[in-house]
Length: 490
Image (tube, rainbow, N blue to C red):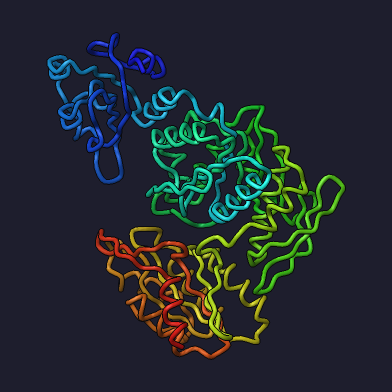
């Protein structure tokens, strides 16, 4: 694409060098992937500043550079190398604008559903994807576990990729016949403008609980981050919100979108009722527009009935046939690491991604509802390093009060000392029904070996993740694989 067309999509403060007769073949924010005729956008990341790599990008063939720091490279250098310098106020915003233009505004042609909230995003996205695909539409998905184009997985390291990666992925979805895409929208991506200039047809709010406070500092700032998605919706879009969460009303207060509520609260547009669940699945009713619909899913728990109701609301408002919606919910397969049951004889292990205080509480409460004090409940969990420290003692208190026995172990300590994290956790435990086993594999082994034959063991925190990160190094580790290995040796 001509550089002049891309420049027209930006709010430029200063322009130096030739703009006409230059073709841009790719956009990059990582100097390592720059090649000939690349437009390099220097953004400030968490660990490093892209402005430090401008010279590397130019040496690798970048013909234009977008930057917000005017002092890092002398203007004469750009002119000498025949590289166009484009100075902007905000490089992250510029990356979003220029990539949207480069990939020809793909979300204007793709029905995009954005889901934000602390919990339920992944499961809700899988419900919606299954419904839409069962209705005959090829669908993309961008989320925590994986990205998909139809059934093809696409690797990513972030819940919400950078804006240029997103637009490239949307363009590819269109070229491969997708009509819809469901996307988990993280609070980080909203603050860091990764989803600026992206057109959402539907935006969904699931709930808000304490999480990511290492980044947002306060719950109020966390809420403000989520609110960005709804504040930017246009009048011809749809906002779906959880009426059970009182924070919803602040979130949608300024949106221009048409709003619809779901939940167990009387007056919800999509009213969830009669929830029943056991270790085989969940049944529930949804009342909508004067009619009642009975549904069942193999996914377990009241929270999954709520996730399914969210999906029902989204797909109804998108115009899908309700019979197909009901069938899509009924046939949605198990989501990896989301209350996933592994069993041998009468002993059951539940692998769940519950890594916040609220999600751990809900997982354990669901288990107690199922077992009705007829089975002992064990919990194995830790907390991630370099993340919100305030939740650690709260999670310790919850696990200690709702388990016969707790084994506190390492999660992803990252660059923190695992024992420091564990000490933070035990500060919240009020009784002595816990032990510390830092090695996660040994902790899982001991919970399986020492528990009763009819025990239910919750392994919480990592869910679908197949790695453990220690001192910046990721090694293969799967809670599910580890549990399966030791259950077989029972």
